Length: 231
Image (cartoon, rainbow, N blue to C red; front, top):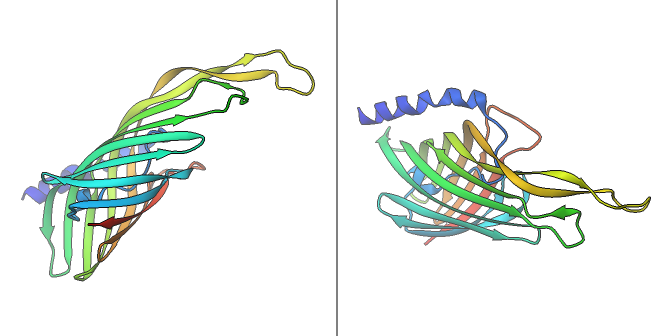
């Protein structure tokens, strides 16, 4: 009964996908942690691509309570990003000898900051901050003791802040630019939608792929891929 109520609650969040907006850059990736999918882990380390951007993130998951704490970090020449989150299963049910359904939850906070060189025509650094809540509903197929596949659908809601600014005229000639961009403020962002993904577990190795806005296909595709090792 508890699982049915949880399933109905997850279903009610799906219409929000119709109002999905472009994601805040603080949404660093689209793949939830293994704990939110019902895949228990003590400690895992990995690396992930970032949503619609070049670069990668280092991942670390540590089991705490019923779920796991996730920490993300990257430091590149042009940007830096950090994140922290916690995911856990809310309800689970065995559907047979090889199938199990899990409704999970994951809340995360992401930070993304661009960096520009001294000679770039940009003043300041654009920073984005994003709070993200996802409710992944997954179906785990255990092919072998060491092999399983877990497709999932993950309704989400998020809110945050993204950078804004203006173009400022500067002295110029026919060989130089006449404007530079000044980061001066932030504006509020809100979005809701649904992610689709798959997790493949091979012994201690986890492979994840997800698309962050299943019902909104845009040129800025929020897709991410991750690989992790469980210890």
